[in-house]
Image (cartoon, rainbow, N blue to C red; front, side, top):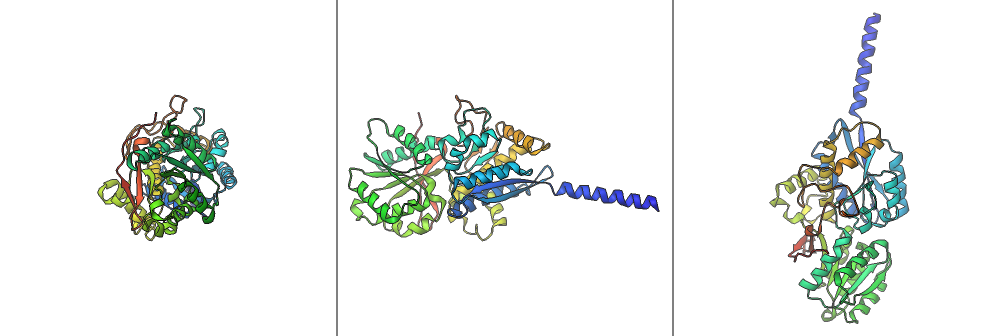
Length: 410
């Protein structure tokens, strides 16, 4: 009788141990603005979850879980999410969001504390350029050390602009773009600049636009997000058509409800072109990897992705999907063991040493990351200038790529 009880006890212990192992999880925090720019936050979440679902959200006995962390566009809230991440024994990485300021402001904290940050949107140049080999930030997105060259090349070569006027958000993000645009424009071009603040409203935007139109400018280079961007586009629509100027924009405008707020203005003929990576969901059926990604997304979010060709903030989906594929490739090259700090470090090193090609939506990635040095400032950038295109909104709300001249940064 005692032996039977002992045997039952051993079976119970084994079952409990097995259950405990099957329930091990690794969390990926999504630090993003789910309040004011939900379109971009949802698109990024869908893209990452689609990539993870292709391995059944499982790797080496761990369940991969995406956790929404809404920072509401506030850098201090983002900082609180980072601190919570460091205390979470199951949190392996953070997927960043749309806004650059949190990751510029707290860049030292991120790297000094070993926060593995994967960036599928925020484009601020300094984010990935922490001056140390112990660099914990990896980006697959537009890079503002290069974006200005593409904006200026498009304005000059495609739109034939001779007097560009920069309209820039007065934040570290806007200022980093200012440096690049100035360099791209060249010393011979006296580039005029107007700075605007967050929460600029329509009446203020209309005054600013009117002043630029009444100057000698023949096009506007815009750096801002969806909320303010919609006011400036609608303000341009209020100008009589012969005097309107084309707007060449950073892709920050695509992160919120921009299109629904500006659809009428665009239909009235306001010319708006914006930078993004060289892939459009409108053409997903032409690429096997894209068909697979869309099928994975639809299996998880059937309502949100029913008309994925016109998914709001589509590049959020594209970048997060590709970044998710790179994350899985790095995870497959290591043994996930030890405490969470050791796992984060091992994974960080693995991201710098992805040897096998990884098929994504934008391209097939060949060694996308490497160890950061001052001589290789792009070591933690998965995309280069050759991966950036200009695009515009189609009448149905989808994004159409424009033919682009190649432009190399110096």
